[in-house]
Length: 395
Image 1 (cartoon, one colour):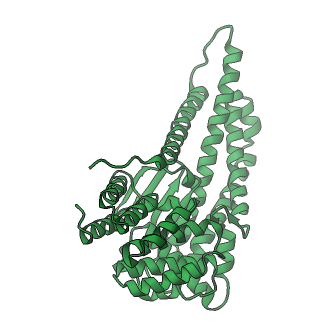
Image 2 (tube, one colour):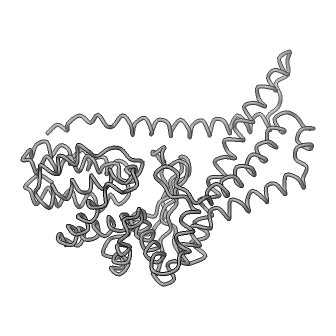
Image 3 (cartoon, rainbow, N blue to C red):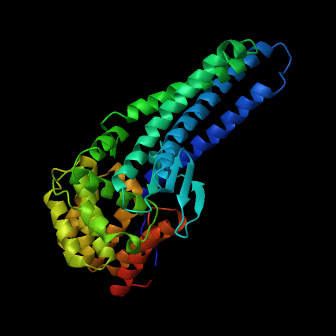
C-alpha cells in the first residue's frame, strides 16, 4: 500500500540539513584554524594577505568551537549536579552531538538532527524517589554554577598567562586563538547568569525559574520535582512499568492549572494509557481540556493532539478528534515527539473508517521511528502495533 505523501517533512529535512551543515562547518573551520595555527606559512608576494585571511578563518573557527564548548560545559554541569545526588545520565544533546541511554542501560551516541535542540538539552534519571527535590535542585543548579566557575577559570588563565600579549607576538592566528579563549570565558559566564534568570525561554523554562519552584515550601516543590522526574524517565526511555506509581500521583496533585500541573497531568494520562486504565486516562484528559485555554501557549498543541488521539483511539469520537487535530497548531515542544501528529492523523482516519489512509499514516510514523531515534519510540511503536491489531490492520 503506498504511503500518502507527507508535506510536513520539509521542516524536519530542513532542520536536518542545517544541523549537518553546522557540523561540517564546525569540522572544516576547526581544521582550517588548526592548520593555520600550526602549518607552515606559504611564502610569496601574497603572504600577508594569506595570513590575514587565515587569521579571520581561525578567529571564526575558534569562536565556534568556544561557543560549542560553553554549551557543552553547561549541560555537563547539569549532569554533574545530578550525579552528586545519585542520578544517572539519561540523555545529553549539544550541537550535532546526541548521547542517549539505551533501553539496555548502555550509553550510545548519534547525530542530533533536531536543530531546535542543538542549543543543549540534558536529562538525568533519579535512582530513588527519596530526596527527590534535593536531587532535582542539584541537577538544575549544576548547569549555571559550572558555567560560571568555568568562565572564571578561563578568565584567570587568560590573565595569568597574559595570552593576549603572548599570542599577539607570535602572529595573527595565535592572536585569534587568544580571542577564542576569551570568548569561551565570556560566553560561559553569560550562559551561567542568563540561565539563572527566572523566566521562560520560548517553550522552555529557565534554570532560575525551576530553582525557585523547587525552593518553595510544602507540597508544591515535591510535586514539581515529581513532574521533572517523570520527564527524565520519558527522555531516558524508562518503561512505564518501572516508574513509581506514587510519583505519578504526586505529579498530578498540584491542581492549580499551572504549566507544571498540566505537565504532570499529561504524564499521568500517558501512564494510565500504558496501564490500560482508560477511565483514569479519561479523567486526566478532561482536566487537561478544562484548563487548556489558560495553558502556556506552546503547551496547547500538545494537549490538542493528545486529546485528538485519545478521542479517536479510545473514546471513538471521530468528529471531535478531527476538530481537535485540525485546530492543533505548531509548538517547539512537539520536537520531543515528531511523529505525534502523523500518529494522531492515523488514529483519526481509523476512527472515521478510512483503514487504508490510517494504515498509510501508521506506516509512515512507524518507518520514521525505525529510521530516526525519538523519545520513547519503543513504546510508541508498541502502541501503533496494538492499535493496528485491535482494529484489524496489518501489523
